[in-house]
Length: 160
Image (cartoon, rainbow, N blue to C red; front, side):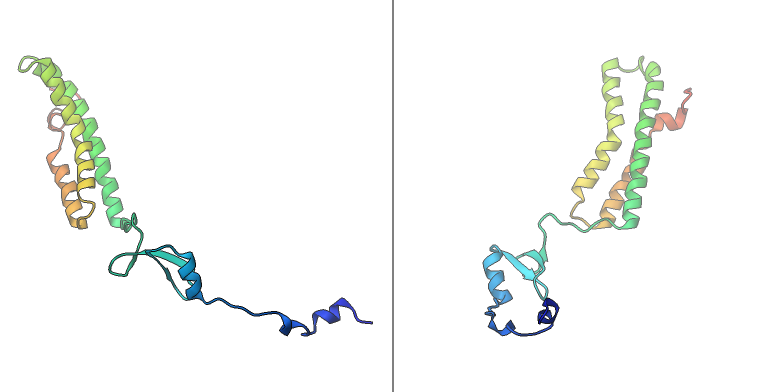
C-alpha cells in the first residue's frame, strides 16, 4: 500500500515534461517597445533610452536637496510676509498719497507692489529650472533685497 506522502517524495516522472525555455533576450525583443531598453540581470527594471544610450525618464528631474528645500521654504515665507507688509504699509499711506496722485494710479501701484513678491518667486522658479542651484539662490535672495516693503518698514503698522 502506497500513500500520497510516499509519492510526493519520489522523483519519478519529472523527466517526462518538456523543458522549453525562452531566453531573456528573446523576451525583451518581443515585449519592449522601440526606444526602451531593459536593465539588470533579469530585466526587472525598464527605462527609456536617450540618444547617448543612458537611461532616463522624460519628466524626471533630480529632487531638491535638503538645504535648497529649506532655503526655498524660508524665502517663500519671507515673500509672504512681504506681501502682507505691502498691503498694510500701502493702505496706511493711502490717505497721505491722495494729495499727490489720483486714487486709480495709487490702487494700481499698490496692487502691483502686493503682487510683486509672488510674481518674483514664480519667475525665478520657472526661469531657473535648468540652471545651477546658485543661480536660483541668487535670484531668490536678490528678490528678498529688492522687494522690501518700505512703507511698512518706515512707518510700521501704526503709520506716521
